[in-house]
Length: 237
Image (cartoon, rainbow, N blue to C red; front, side, top):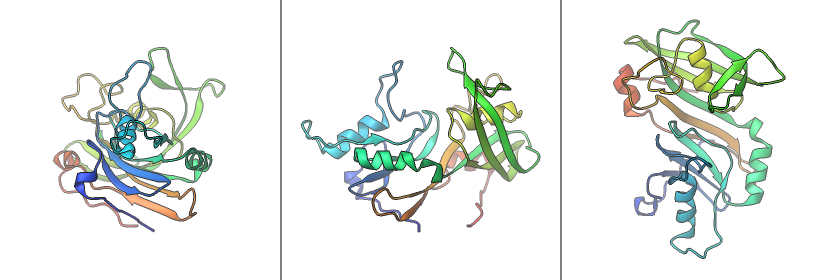
């Protein structure tokens, strides 16, 4: 079941696109460059603060708020789910392993084989850089499934099925395979002429925390990807 309900533009939170909203959840499309939630090192405006203002409708005394269910990196664009109650948040997180998450990525090089699963134990150093370690006692086992959809201009367009959701997982796995994502200044190789990370959370499917219905949301292909790869035709389910 695919559901997409967009309220009138005048009711959209500034900087985000609402794909679906009810009394329990809100699904939005986050642009690249926007944090999901603030960190100890960065207190700038975030998707979380924007949505809190949105659900309070200008009333600073309102008790309405949104709850973090999962996160996208600042540099990653695409779909993200927020809960509108503690109950909905706990249910979604408790069943998160049942959530299906699909990404699009453009990477450097002609990736082979054209489909497969990258697995490693991921950990993070003091500089907040994630990397693979052979020690299972140190890292968390992570799996990234990919399929090459198109190759052109020395680049590969991948559909990513995220089987686990570790910090920077997709970026690290692809970089360590020798195919960093276009625009990845942290895990790329040297100076990248592209200023935007070519990674998008394109589709998400999960069970509604209260109704029990399976919901699926998809978003369009960014113009940036088309400029890199030419015409893109995605496989139909």
